[in-house]
Image (cartoon, rainbow, N blue to C red; front, side, top):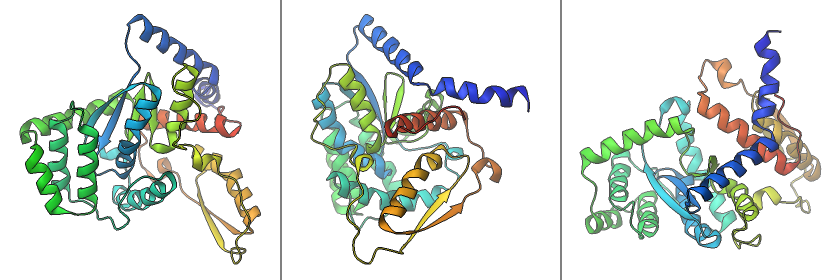
Length: 316
């Protein structure tokens, strides 16, 4: 075994340690106070990203409850090397969003249609023009609803009423943001950045809420149950469910697969499901690159989830 292979688990354990996370948070909070800055987060919004659409509905309430400022940053273009099967994700994300919307009492069109890129660009140019306005959130919700419902008349009315950033300025801004986003340490839109940590989608707001609670902000009984899916408990077995197949696509290199395994076993046992495990060849073994920003986010995010579920993690 090489020196690098021997050191890697120790480095991973350090990077994902709770003690280091607490030290970083304390350092960031001390610096924020010294600089007399308000509690402020940046939200990376992409209108043709269903997860962004759901987050945009939640964040105004989230900001009011915790007394923090949330600054939207409109995106559209992405680094394609981060999305090895972008066409499949395009179809999966809205289907997933309809389920998440139902779970969290949010709005996403059940009969959605994938928006054409030129229409998404027009809506994005409109949001870029109003990025600093108080009405950004309501405008984003209206544009997203019209876009995903394929309501051309409503969309045209909104664009006519609110206008758009000039095409050349918008193009430059979007390309610059795409490149800077990756340098800043992330790759997924629908993401909130607060004092050095990233929180992707509604399913990670629980981590930020607990962090803000520890700073004395908000309260633990915020009415939106952002951690509902994680706190779900196994219920009575519906008739006819026993013996139904449950398929787990498992990658041995994926920390998310590792975290899901025990819970999947428990679910299959409780409901009497026929568990089928389908091994998946890891991306690196298929010749696909996993850039540094993606690797580090996945590792740190998995560590947070592991601590939440009390699963041993870190020395990987």
